[in-house]
Amino acid sequence: MEFKSVDKIFSEMDKKKEISNIKNKLMFDIDYKPDKILIRNELKKVIDDFIDYAKLGIKQNIIIYGSRGSGKTLSAFLTAKGLNDNYSIPFYYVNAREIPTDIKIYGYVSGVKIRGLSLDEAREKFDKKLKGKALIIIDEADFLKGSDALYHITRYTGANLMLLTQKPLWYRNMEDESVKSSMQPDQVYFRDYNADEMREILLMRASEGLKHYDNGIISMLAANIVLNYKSDTRIGIKALEILGMADKWNEEYMKSAITRAYMEIEGETLNNLSDRDLIILSALMNELDTSKAYNLIRNMEDFSVKNISKSTFFSSVNNLQNLGLINLIRKKANRFYTMEAQILLSDESIVTEKLKSRLL
Image (cartoon, rainbow, N blue to C red):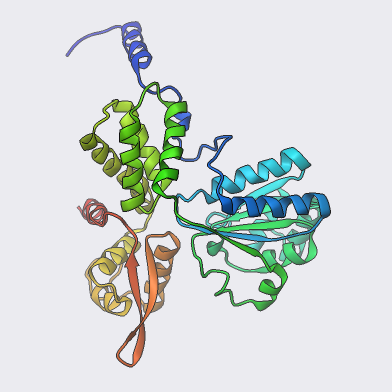
C-alpha cells in the first residue's frame, strides 16, 4: 500500500494520457456519426430519389434492408443531413424499438405529451407540426405495433418516409394491403461489406482516431470480421479500439481483441434480455425445432419458464428474432410444417456464460 497526494495521482495519470495511442476516442463510439462515409452504390439511388423530392416534390418512400452493422442508420442520418443542408428540408428520426406505437410516433415527432390524447388528437398535433416537405426516418421498422402512422404519413402528409429494417421479407409479409398500396416504396438492399470495404472503413477510423497503427493487421481484422462476424462494423470498430489502446499489432492479439469486442457488442444485447428470454434462447440452441424447444422448457423448474404457455413462449421467440439473435425458418416435418430457429450468434458460448451468471 502506497500513500500519494491527489496532485501526484493527477500528474501520473496525465502523463499516461499523453503517451496513449488514442488520438480521438470519439472515432470508436459505435453511435458516432462521422461526416464522411463509404458511399455505397445503393445509396446513390436513395439520394437521387431525395433530390427529385426536394426539387420536384415527387415523393418516393424508401425501405432500406440490411444486416446489423451494414451502415443503414448512419447512411440514413447523413443522407437526411444532406437533404437538410442543401434543401432546408427537416428530418425526424424515430426508433421503433423504443417508440413502437402509432400514437407515440405522432407525439414524438410533434413534440407533445400524448397522455390523455386520443389517436385522432395526436394525429392532429402531428399534422400541425408537419407542414410542407419533411423526411421521417423509422429505424427498426419491424418493431412497429400498428400501421396507422405509415398510412397517414404516406397518404395525407407531404413528408417522405424512410424505413430501415434487418428483415428482407418484412414489407412483403405486411398484412395491411392499404398501407402497402399507399407506400409503394423503393426497396433498397444494403449487402454486407466485403473485406476491401471493411478495411477502408477501419482505416478511416484508425487514421482519425489513433496516433499509429498497422495496415497489415487492420487488413487481417477486416477479413476476419467479414468472414466470421457477418461484416458487422460495430465489432470491427470496437476491436480496432481495443487494439489501438493496447498498441499491440500482431495476429494473436487481434484475435483476442475481436473476441472481446464481440462479447461487448453481443453481451449488451444479452444483458438486456429477461431471464425467460435467455433461457428460451439457450433451449433453442439445443433444440432448433421451436415446438420441441417448447416441450423442453415447459417442465423446467425455473420459475421464469415453468408451465409457460405456448403463446408466451412464441412471443419470446419473436422477440429474439426481432433482436437479430435468431432467424425463424418454416420447414416441413413429415406431413406438417414447423418453425426452426437459426441461431445468428457467432459465439454461442456467450449465452451459456450469461445464463450461468444469472442462475448462480
